[in-house]
Length: 226
Image 1: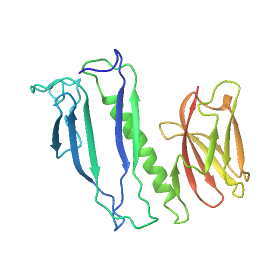
Image 2 (image 1 turned 135 degrees about the horizontal axis):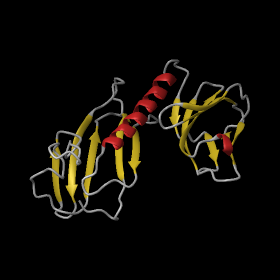
Image 3 (image 1 turned 120 degrees about the vertical axis):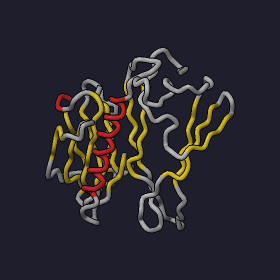
Image 4 (image 1 turned 180 degrees about the vertical axis):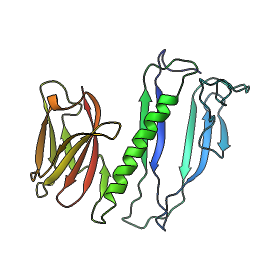
C-alpha cells in the first residue's frame, strides 16, 4: 500500500446530503469507477467501495487480506450521481463529510475511529439540516458567503470576529459546536451585524459556528482554534 509519506493519514469521505431529483427525492449513486493510474485500468463497481472491510481485520475483505495481485500506485475513484435536470437559474447541492486520523499504524490500519468520526459528523450535519427545515422560512448554508468569520485559523491574542456581510441584517443567535455535536457556547438576542468571541472561551481544535440571522437563515461554518 504505497503512500506519499512515511506517516500518511487516513482520510474518509461520506455523503451527508445528495443531489435532489425533479420530485425532491435524494438521488443515490449511479456509478462508481476505480482507476489504477499505473496500469490505466478502469473497473466499474456496483458498490461505493472497492474493498468493504477493515484492513486491520484479517478476514474482512480489504486490500490487506485480498488474494488478488493489486498493482502498486495511485488508486482513484469516480462516483457519479444523477441524472437530474436544472432550469436556468436553478441550483442543486451535495454535502460531504470529510474526516482524517493522524499517525495510523501502517500498512494495514484500523479504520474504526475514522468510520466513527465520519458517522458523528454526518449525524451532526443531518441534525442541523433537519432543524433548519422545521420551518419553511429557514435555510441552512454550509460555509455561507453571507457570513465573514476571521481570523480563521484563530491564534493567540485574537478574538474571533463573526460578521454579517449584509449590514442590513442582524445576527439573532450564535452557537459554538464541537465535533461531537455538543454545544460549547451559546449566545442569544445578539441583534447586531457583528459579534466577537474571546479566544480563551474557545476550545483548541475544530469547532463549528452556527449563526442564525433575524430573517431565520442558518449558516454553519468551520473554525480552527490553534
